[in-house]
Image: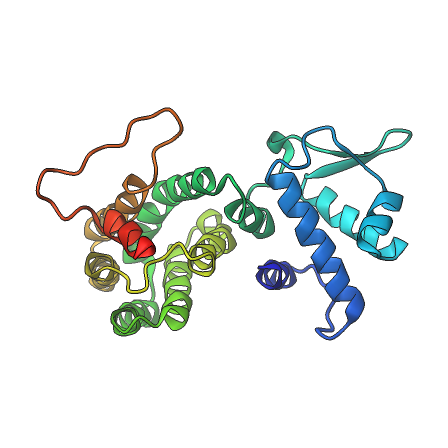
Length: 276
């Protein structure tokens, strides 16, 4: 888990440790991931005081590693350092919730279901519109690539090859955002990648993606390739809405039953696959 969080950090420009074999880097990312998980998971609550001395003693790291870890956590809004007050944990309202590392830690913690729902609702708000925009604005090369990606996803998905399937899924959704021509949509690429990779690496995907999900990815790609914004938006919304509707309901809300005799939505089939 820590490796992926650190890899995302590196892609986003945090190059505090570029040498993979460097022991200081390994210690640093271990401390960072541990504290990040504890803060986002609620083990370290709002107002909890942290000290550099305490971090050094707990993890057996240098002052430099402890200070750099606090600097990164502060850059994410997870802690704040004030003169004569020290370092204190911040409330969730201060967190940079679009930071891929914060997303990953929340997906790996006790609030996983709530984080998945929030991220999926964000995707529902953005990606159908991005797909429609891509149908209007994509270049011929982008249209051709989307169709090829969806076809390759089917091949790997039907064979249960989740690692290459995930890579293709990430590329397809990133390409849709890029092809939209909307820089605000493009800025969410790392967020979408974090949730797609997180779902797979945390074991939240079935061993074989369900056929309807594969069909809907191909429908989106074909609609974009054909220059049909309405069909692209409709198919993407269907895909993501099914995923959201299969999630556990928010605490205190009743689950919506499936129609009698139905096999369940694509998302419900996926959730069943996780348990099998």
